[in-house]
Image (cartoon, rainbow, N blue to C red):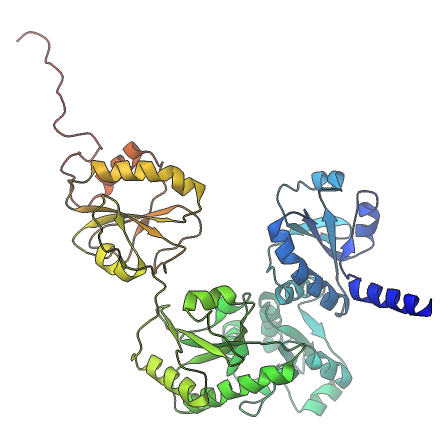
Amino acid sequence: MRALIVVSCVFLAVSASDVLEFTDSNFERKVNEHDLVLVEFYAPWCGHCKKLAPEYEKAATKLKNSDPPVSLAKVDCTAETSTCSKFGVSGYPTLKVFRGGEVSKDYDGPRESDGIVKYMQKLSGPSSKEIGEVSEVEAFIARDGGSVIGFFEKADSNIAKAFQKVADSVEDLRFAHTTSESVLENFKYKDNIVLFRPKVMENKFEETRVVYSGDGTTGNIKKFLEEESFGLCAQRDANNAGKFKKPTFIAFYEVDYVKNPKGTNYWRNRIMKVAKKLRDEGLKAYFAISNKDEMRQELEECGVAQKSGDKPVVCAYDEKGRKFNLQEEFTLESFEEFVRNALDGKLEPYLKSEPIPESNDEPVKVVVAKNFDEIVNNDDKDVLIEFYAPWCGHCKNLAPKYDELAEKLIDESEITIAKMDATANDVPSPYEVRGFPTIYFAPKGSKSSPKKYEGSREVDDFIKYLAREATNELQGWDRNGKKKGGKKKKATGEL
């Protein structure tokens, strides 16, 4: 019997969730119990909800133990229909921030745990925490993530005011400030802003504390934090990936500072050794580590997803957004050589591309990444190009109309009608594809500034658009899209 009780207790401990569950019968009462709460309205069958669930759970656990604590809750809209209807939930997951029992705002932040935590912590209190004791400073910098503390003699000084404005606008770092004489004396700072690197990421290659030495302007303080917060080699994830400067060299492996900080830093220190050497030589490069499972799609886009083993795989992005990957097994020597060759322009960029078609004689020309320049960036012709996905229903509906368009324009020597599978090929800049189909018109002489087609997708509408936008007038249609050489109306009336 005792064994059964022990097993049951263990099971409950393992299965317990820190995400609160609200229902129609208790929602109003429960939501009023919290000054601040994030509520997810979901459906059990929803794929996006299933993907969010483990991240939401991890965030709930972290926020439960934060200072101040913040609660995360969820409502099953397939069962609690009245509540979901009351708040106008029409898609899943829908997340809303409640303050004092009322909707404060729709949640528009990240969907991974660390991003949710930072977003809600920012809402849970003042953007900069006031600190009065040395022990409070030590506790503040001991927490996860980078910390910024302003040590000021007067709270109303120009630099203190600028610091507060920066704290209000920067979401990726935690801010605190102090005017305590004992704290200033203990840390030997006076009217200084200090960036403290996370304890778990301290290393021998860079300073643990970085002191801002500029003037009291918000722009310069922000610039300082942008340049120093990532350090020599930061942890990069889906939430902050877009904030890294280029050229960026990323090592992907089992990055986990919760379960395996020692193993994580084992490889990070090797990256940093190379980074420090090159930085000391004055070479401009930025370095990062990423979890290979979390960033699996990026590995696939960079052509290294198939590599196995415990050693890091490496992908790089240059200022033009081109991708490069390390083909050899990771060693200090191979990594350094890879970085140097990439910086010197000695490497061929990696292109995700289907093979170039052996024949491309159909009216709609097939474009892949490897022949994009030849067909689309060819400055002898205007090009209308459709970026599609094979599974896209709208693309399938468009296909016969697009084929008909190409057939009608087959004798127009200065226009190419083309298509590209954007799921199987890299889409080059400046084209942006966020849905399917996406259609662009690239006029000759202006290939760097293609125009996104926003019109109707009927054949006649395409023709009218091309007749109007074509660099040179079409042979078969005038600028108004009227067919040339058509029958003229018979003249009437007497001379």
